[in-house]
Amino acid sequence: MATVLGLAAQIEREFVSQRTKEALAARKQAGMQLGRPPGPAARHKLDDRKMEIRGLLDKQVNKRAIAKIVDCAPSTLYGWMKRKNIQAA
Image (cartoon, rainbow, N blue to C red; front, top):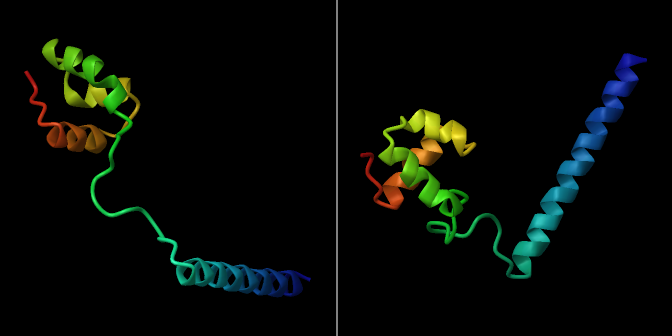
């Protein structure tokens, strides 16, 4: 019984893979761009909280704590600060 169910699951995975490849090929053929656009994003999720982050930096809150407050990974905060040329106080 388990062998039959495993075989059915494998066949379904192959069908899903085939449909996905066909859809991507069709979109590419139609001239649509696949994936994320090249270059930096125009907006970032931390842009809306810029003043809050600057205020916390002025109060000398460490960056890991700020990342938790604004609900992002520390590496996301560090990269955003580097792109925006924001220095810790």
